[in-house]
Length: 253
Image 1 (cartoon, rainbow, N blue to C red):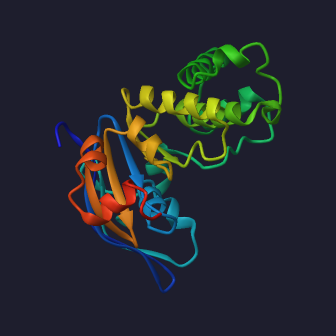
Image 2: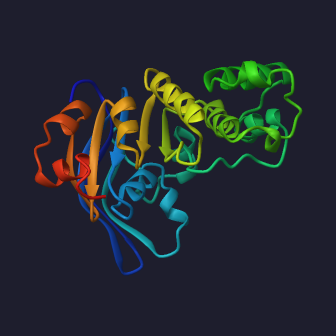
């Protein structure tokens, strides 16, 4: 792997109660570009994604052993504030979850919570986030409109803008286009590619074609284990593991 590393995972094992969801996962995620996690339902890919910003902490019965390092620092030490981690590592979920407020207030939410900005500074930050999410031209004349009035694809890009507004170093996507129509899916994929040029992007997807289109590196998970992790073109065209070849060729999953 060329370039600096953003995340280093070592011996990561996760449990929900007595059930093991992830077993002994070790990998490095580069700071540049897009990394995708693929695999069938229940394989552990979303669990490892949520470990990257400590979202699993809020799940009753969750426990973890091993290490997750962000820029060389273990984010699971007792002295690490998970709120600070989540500020650095934003997340966009499978289904858009805009707040029941205006478009402007949705994007401004994190800024108001974490920064003391003048109205002019706030306006600029909201515009920049909406520009980065490819939504500004569509909503600039109706920022006071309730977010629920937007289409499904627009709501998802609004959630991306909300995450970008606080200027994270990493953005995690958990099946961001699974509920969207093909045109909206294309826009989200184009956005993922563009964001991968500026910050670390990690995406979980069931869509193998999507992973092949947007990801620089891909990890294949099965039954809680990382089976193979390689440059995307190699994983899809020259997989080293028989299980990987069976999955990417459509023989199961």
